[in-house]
Every structure is written in structure tokens, then in C-alpha cells.
Length: 99
Image 1 (cartoon, rainbow, N blue to C red):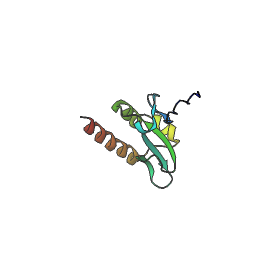
Image 2 (image 1 turned 135 degrees about the horizontal axis):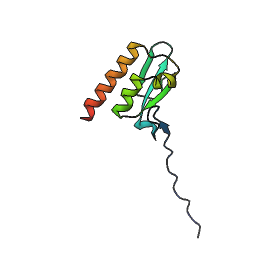
Image 3 (image 1 turned 90 degrees about the vertical axis):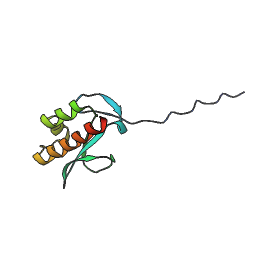
Image 4 (image 1 turned 120 degrees about the vertical axis):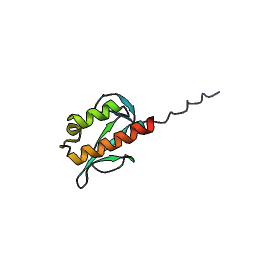
């Protein structure tokens, strides 16, 4: 009688929020990417070229990412006023969806 191998569990990539430093599944976090031509953008697909950083869905993390230089350091760039406004719009949309 041969022993059957245990079924392999599917690998779930883990990423860390740059603000609160909590690890979570990659799909549970929002990727923010710095691109050469369009600046800092939200990357819903997780596949855009450029330097990326991840934020969890906590409003406090998004607020701190916009108001401090935590996200700017992770992306190795300066956040322009346009970039900050784009992030605030996403933050507002996320808070409305959760209510």
C-alpha cells in the first residue's frame, strides 16, 4: 500500500503595506506605481512597468501615504500635487465603497 502525497497548496504571494508594515496577500493590497511617463499611478492590475509600492485598505494608511514622505521614499520619487490629488481621489472612492 503506497502513501498518497498530500495535495499541494497554491502559493499566495505576500506583500507588505509601506505605511503600517503589515503583510497580506498581494491581491488584498493596492499597488501604487511610479512610471517614467505618467508619474505616480494606481495599478489595479499589478502589472504596470515601474517601481511599485503597496498600500492596504486602511484609510489611515492612505492618509499617511499622502501627507508624509513614506510613499515617496518607497517609490524613490517626489510626489507632485497631481500625484497627491490622484491618491486622495482613490482614497475617497475607497472610503465611499466601504460605507
